[in-house]
Amino acid sequence: GENGEAVQLKENKMSPEEKATFKKGWDDNAFNQMASDMISLHRTLPDVRDRDCLKLEYDVNNLPDTSIIIIFHNEAWSALLRTVHSVLDRSHPKLVKEIILVDDFSNKDHLKEPLDAYMSQLKKVRILRGKKRQGLIRARLMGASVARGQVLTFLDSHCECAKGWLEPLLHRISLNWTNVVTPIIDVISDSTLSYLHTSAKSTSVGGFDWNLQFNWHPIQKRDIESRKSDADPLRSPTMAGGLFSINKKYFEHLGSYDPGMDIWGAENLEMSFKVWMCGGTLEIIVCSHVGHIFRSRSPYEWRRGVNVLVKNTVRLAEVWMDEYKQLYYDRINNNLGDYGDVSDRKALRQKLGCHSFQWYLDNIYPEMFIPKNSVCTGEGSSNSPLPMCIDSSTETSTLNKPVGLWPCHQQGGNQLWFLDKNGRIRRDDHCLFNSRGTVMVAECNEQYAHQLWVYNKVGW
Image (tube, rainbow, N blue to C red; front, side):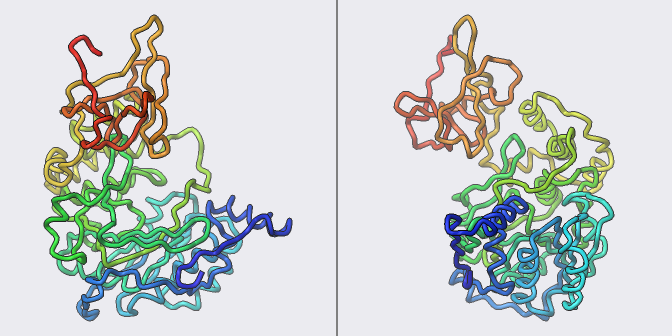
């Protein structure tokens, strides 16, 4: 694993005991814990910064300090400790005021007295322990409430900070207290723990769809043309939310996170909309790199019977999206559920004098597909005694696969489609296309003739 290299394990050559350990590590963490445990807690990483970034110099005496806030719940020992040591090993001591580990009610023995004993040796680390399981949002609020640094830096508990990661983030905030910044988030493989870095030119910026799910997009042409150097920050309409830095006073000025949101989900979009609409700037600082283990599933269980993500997202839509909230409600068949009282968050928006969501779309995310600008909207159905409708998700896992058919239910959701002015049948950034006679879903592209459809006056 040194220098970010992969750890190759062959399960077919393991003993029964090793196979059991290997499987348990995957089950508990949704990544290869056995590989993680074999890697040094201080493993080396290559310097992944672009050439233009290496030319930049920072005066640490004129930069604000930061509190690093890391939330964990039943995290693997090696992954958590490697996260902490990567901060300490690759950050100037003057810049790290403290590292706050917030334990979201873990029940693993290694995260109790052994963790206390280990971290007591590291002067800048302190542990806060929740008395009940409360989730990422409220755990972060707990950490932020006691932070003593001028800047709050949030990290996940399975990260590795690369060389020179911190100075560019703090420098940008030092220029303007309303700058909210994220590093380039590099991928640490969940199976081999290899560190896979992204260059400044090929990085992506954040977006979202009308299901209000975060997604990544290529850098827009207008942003490419306006940049003077590969080291320049990138404006990003949204952020992934796991890793970012923000001036502590500005975080409080914006009302921090919505405390009415549960566990996790939609808090990243809420913060993104709020920053842009209320006078701030959200940027990706391409000279800062932090690796993150991306997991294909969550290894944790939550209480059943409550759709937390829908509750949080409805709160987001009610407060920040004005008339555009209906686009999301159409996707969930207008089943809003009990999303609680949002009057205080609406009052906050009014107090801050924030822009409208239309302003955000026009000025920050003009590339966003707006369904109301479509030629027509509705279901794509067959003309038969028992009509069948095109019924497909447009998630990444369904791309380039045949669309599904299902009895028409006239409730929107996966049967809701839009015909845009360019002749494409789409939902958000995904379009129907003809692949040798089979209708499939793919990324929309104006250059592809096989995504173009002709709609006549009788509805065909």
